[in-house]
Length: 500
Image 1 (tube, helix red, strand yellow):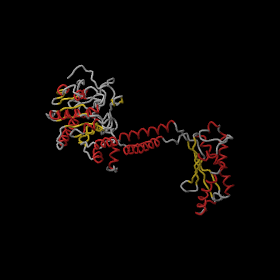
Image 2: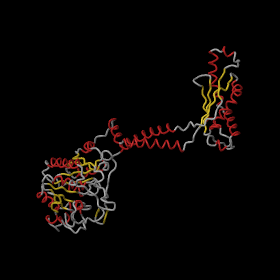
Image 3: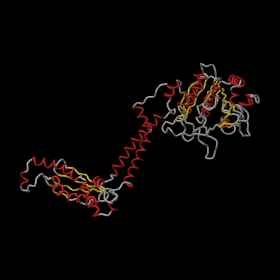
């Protein structure tokens, strides 16, 4: 089994096919970030004060004689002063001054309080930013809080206590306040545009990663080449999904019948018709080496479209002018009589046990050149009937009467009927549902077929949906266990009065 590889081209192709998901996620994330900033994050206001650091106490007249060494010394003092002003003593003094001027309700959104009701020093420190301006001897002190007056007062308090405190502690130089802090009513945070852009970028990255990871761990069948590499069997054809009217879609809201489009229906797209013709051609060539004209159509699991596929393959053969018999051998969940709107009172089950003849059991010309042998009444022992000598004899008889015989069989991974039947025919076709059937399902089915030495003619990939992979119509196909074996829910008997 060849190991799958990923390259840049395949990843880009994946992202392009999922571009609507990536872009949609980016827009939603951008909107979420914007809404969070707008309605959850508090508005913050900034104030600042600037101070000039001097290295000596010379008068202004003497300052004209200052040399480059004095400027460098002043610059070095800026770092020292910032460290001193960031001390717990200064921060504590600022906190006390705030509590004198403002009530706790005004301060609670910007600061935390200790058990004694005093402002926590660390919360005061977090509101300040101190730095030199462009590596000069000018020191800038900025305060940001949720109240513009509180921010301005913090800066003015530290500007008031800084000159005396710094000279006393450092013992060198001096500071002069250049700009007193002013109340700024315009919020500086959050930046709504910046938050929205950040959200878009986060959405793009996260959605792209999720798409890639989901694809890497997605083990459903989607690629014919991958199927061929893993199982050494070709894909006979890829049947595109028919939007709005797929085989698993209900005809009406309260209807229990499922809509299954046949090739004659005008709603079937041209490319789907051509795909079935291509499948027909591939099957003719595949059967050419077997010497038999019988084909079993099965799937790994229920709800993968094998019954509709079998009907359309039979119709495609009939359209060539050949005589074709379609046998519904799925006695537990027969549907061919519903597809072709005929009776199911007699059929395969009654034919095998001798309760009816071939002529009585077969429904003639359900489509031009196509006859149908429905399943008949549900027997208590379908597996035994299909593995009996009578079934083999019947199959040999009808294969001589018709150019081609197509057999609709139950899912292989559910019951053994399909394996029994497939061993009697020229070959078996596996119907796989795009984006639903997993490689584990196929592997399990292939193991059973290989053990029985069944000639697997190839795969049919059903309901391929390139642009919107992952959205599929499905229909109920339930198996239930009874006293005499499995059943798919409900009787196989048709209550129709007509017998076509």
